[in-house]
Image (cartoon, rainbow, N blue to C red; front, side, top):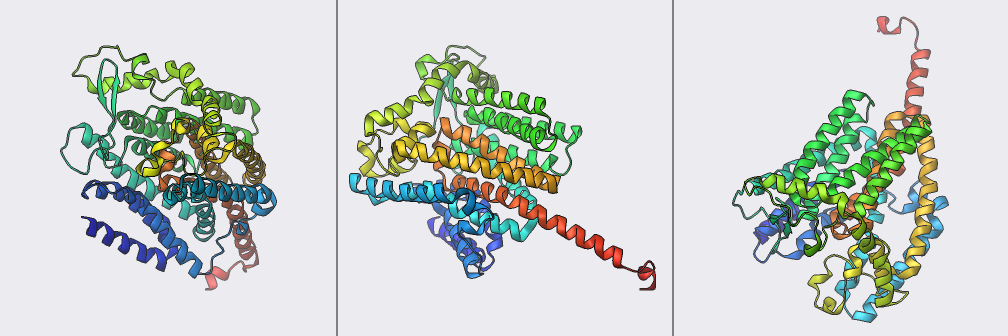
Length: 487
């Protein structure tokens, strides 16, 4: 099976180099295939998680050979709005990479950290160039490809729940067992390597389908259909046992309607209502991670053993009850743990990243503080990293605000996709702040970069679309009244 996997990887890399515009689609297909192939391979090699990154690197090579500019300066407004904090960010990443290498003497730890902090950057530029080439229709088509591929892969969650016996189903390794609601629950992952990744794809698919279904025209029937689809996906996501998926989707929907109300409708009251709902959802995100086994509010709840699905729904409903304890454990407390354990400058790049548990040199590293995003950043970039990322976030906010204002004035279809991409990023940021596991996946990191690239391309695409329509209108005006009939 290992030879088959590498053969398929090679066959996918060739067209990615030859036609870089196929790169994103090939990355999606690779991402949904790499985990089942890994499970069918003896010893389940961990490097299979890099396969999607290999295809993306091949597509980057193809784009470079085609003469595409792949530096962030190719993005309109980037240098002016993001130049200084971004340059300092790169410097800090380099310093902390050297820090971890010297401190632990492990190139593997350093490389894992570099991938985590740098992979989204080329993804941003690549997605921007892809959008420039394919336009709004091309972006929507790619999102449909992702939704269909992810939907096919997520069908494995139901198959595993129905106890289909196949080696490609289930988690890599021992898997996750949940002791809750008076019984033992299994976290289903389907074809994906872990329930965490399956839950992330479920939430992402829900977000993308919402954008696609209401992106052309915002009407009540379309909104109801989109919400119904999200409801179906939530019923699937509940089986993963990862309750934060519920609140991630809620944060996305609230953020989307806030952006529509604020930028498109200029309606302050609905915007503030949506923002308040989003804040409450974020508070729920902080409390959604499973409490300690001995302190779960639903651990002693007794249900009929035959009602397996009700066990998962009951556990999901307890998400809001767990907020106070988890807010303390996953909010600022990990920052304090990281500073107490590693000092103001942290332990260096990669020390809190997913994947380092497979490296022998990491055995002495206490990674508990890295469970939440703030703790992970403090552990790897130190307190200076927290300050610098706050500056980056402020600069990005100003950049995107100008971008959304310009796009909204030019084209509502482009603006709605921009709202969707930003809402998707906001929801994932909320998730990252309280649970970093899924964000150690290379494909997830690339998806974050692609979403940013699509967002930054929207005003340029909107301007181009307006100019095309203007040229067509002028062409019709210059045409003689009977030119069509004479022809």
